[in-house]
Image 1 (cartoon, one colour):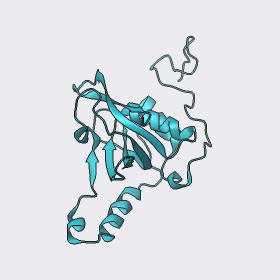
Image 2 (image 1 turned 90 degrees about the vertical axis):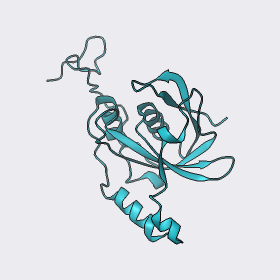
Image 3 (image 1 turned 180 degrees about the horizontal axis):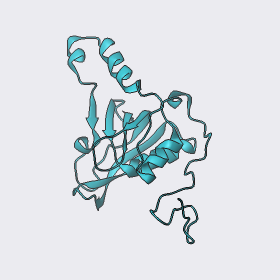
Image 4 (image 1 turned 30 degrees about the vertical axis):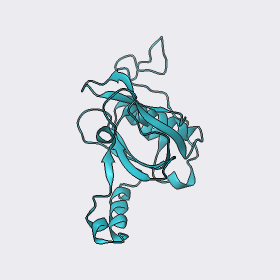
Length: 182
């Protein structure tokens, strides 16, 4: 039973669950993200820690198979999709970051990691200075919330930079935050 808080009627006073939709239903996704994301389910997962239900559970598997089948040489066949963990790619120091990038593709999937967000992102990014493309995974809740909101506001692709702040998470790592590219 939802008992709404007198201070905030959008929050269930018994367990702190947000009961008001965080992202309006029917927000139009950019064509290249259509069918890959559900913004309202993603927001619900982040804020209320509910499992994220993917709109296309076979997407990730197809993406990896396609990448392997489109490999142009032997080395590319043996690569593991070239997806790196953002936590390992960016030094764990305040202001460590990607430099200016464009996030041009995104997929969100459920996480069974056991701690942190119940979902994580696979980001395809292009370095704005070198043109080099990379793929990263991250479950960083703040990054997810920022990217989700930017998409819901019609900002896609996203020109930005990802930097570590001076605040640490429970594991002692400096937190990620999205900033403008310059």
